[in-house]
Image (cartoon, rainbow, N blue to C red):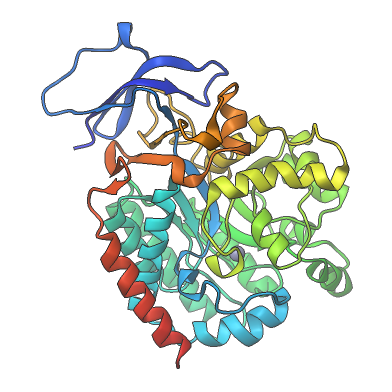
Length: 432
Ligand SMILES: [Zn+2]
């Protein structure tokens, strides 16, 4: 299990600038033990799975640093609305009806969609975390689930305690692929007391945090009116920036906010598709990168995107800053590709485990077929991946050395059944 050899591949390791031509990758028990030329590869062993990737590209799996996976069941349910009424009038009322099985099938649908698009790890913030974890565990994908905490719940403190206990249980039982975090929803939906308690729990148990931050101009205005500080500075003052934290969006930032995010190595989960769709604005990614911030990419939920296609986010992340600044040199393809791989891994505090293909890291990788008409001719692999390739070019997906998608076919998941079940729960929810 997890013993694999991939041969004859063009390898983009994201650990150095050079491509390895006709290279070999070897994984033992889910860990990469060798990446390099075939000539110096260790000898094959009995029972290892062999994949010939001739003519194709082998690269690190993509990391979706911010999503609400089960929201696939609300894909297309309410579109073309501003964030506040979209949440309050449309999404939150149907979310109140959700049950464990709805989240399970919605999450599995998301797992299928993401694996097909080359995503091997995702950070999730949602209700019924156990159902998301169940779907991720069965689906073979890597996950960083955070649950979700809202300050207006009467029993928020109790739920925080339960979430902490669940995180510790996951760490004991499923640490191979599940990396739990705590998910206070946002500074504007969590009161100071809850945020302080979350920060204390994170410190005590060495857990990362996952939060929405500075998503809309309205959130910043409200924060300035209430407390005279920006949402970023507010989190700093409450102690949330001290440890590992992933902050989704970070659209409306002052120069001081940018400096603080960089200084505290906050993992920014940039979600260009969702920000554009909800008219939230566009994150100053060129400035964040220039300041040395850690930036990954997220799709956000499928209700505000409306897909979980990280290749598309990568392209948006590279294109939009150019359009806004009238400068075609900002956020080049290499930077966008890094956000989708190593940047995302680092943004989740998983940079030591995944994000690049190096001995000692987990064998999470994808094989991409760049032979199609839309990818020819091929002068520069990184540029092609960002500006021309499609998520449907991904033909094989490996997590922990396990081949989950092989030549476009799932090896373990029943894709048709998952699509059928997820559609059934989605329609039942919408009809309530
Ligand atoms: Zn979100």
